[in-house]
Image 1 (spheres, rainbow, N blue to C red):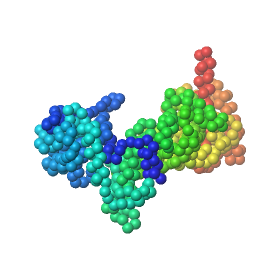
Image 2: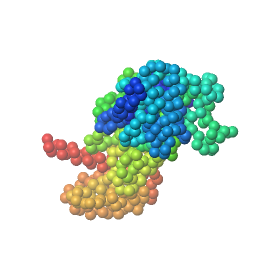
Image 3: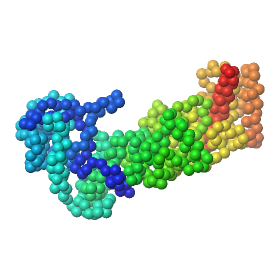
Length: 554
């Protein structure tokens, strides 16, 4: 299913022709008509503030693994110049010369003759920064691969070489020749930056009756070339891929639709400047109207493929095929369930996935999150399925470690309570003063007692009851709250005007069961409600304080 979708993507939008591949190069080796080197020019280009290797459409041959295998018109200094630290320079250059003689023997253009003359003589040593860097051949300032006759000669050579075992291709269902070694995928995080998507490196991965020396699958040359080309093009496009921790999400619309991919890019990870567009979409969602986005076709089939590096291999986290409208609706549902009130001016209108992951780590870096968590979170967002419980447990761990309960942590707990536990009563955007849910009320009560202590001390305390008692109060309320209530009496005595807090404390206690106000233990679901009640009540205090300050300033 994945390969069929990628092959169709190649057919829809095109790309490199068989025998050609986009590759990064470092230098251009410029030759004159007699094959002498005129110059060796660096091909670095400035992208933003970083220098990057130039990407060119170059002749592609079989993937080089072990042994000597030359490339056409572009290769490293060992093959082009015979410079090799392991002493195989002459052997490599002769293999490269033989390849060029076989391809260019009957072409007869000035460029082809110059290249053949170049390989007939030993070039002068060049002072290259790295002998592993790739050189691309030029003749009189023009790239050799741009010569139409040279291009035709290379494609004819590839067609003659494309012989092998005849098979019925598993991807296309058509007759083709078997592709033994398929192309490599340029995925971030894998060793050497490139690995095949389909491969066998141990007997345990082989099909019944096959060995690791046999082809990984009955895939023909066209399908292998098409899916590798399409996937590499998607991975190279900022509007078709996103990174989340170690995972890479690739997405595209059927029939070459670009509007859907562009709109998904910002909607899946909105920024501050997207506030108005996002508010409009969420307004449609909350009103029960059909969501529209730009000139997108909501019925168009949309694909999402999540890839991850895994010990030198490429792992597929998930693959989704659905209408663009359904994926859009699932994303909107995610944002609605994550929405929660904050007294601060938050930078992001909706919390992006990377920020959710960062809250699970000590250093607040999404790259430090659990290896599988990024793909699991993305899958839950785009499919509307349950959130990973690993996310819920990780947030509880960070809170028990004494971290602040901020907007992101509270939003995660709220959304998981809704989707995973089907909780609706206490999972409101802001404070719910009507509910009698015991864990939620206990969380509110803890916030009241903390605020009372803070006001009584004039805000001069380095540690409050939250640092000392929150984790215990959340897990075992009966062991902690009697002590906290006794302390609150002393705090109220120090405060000149404690009527507001004493009244709020009494109202909150009045919502608890008089026979068993404090349970012995709360499970993980109820602990989430406790945290949510604490967060809502605390934000309510901050909001009231801001309103009082604004009124005073006016």
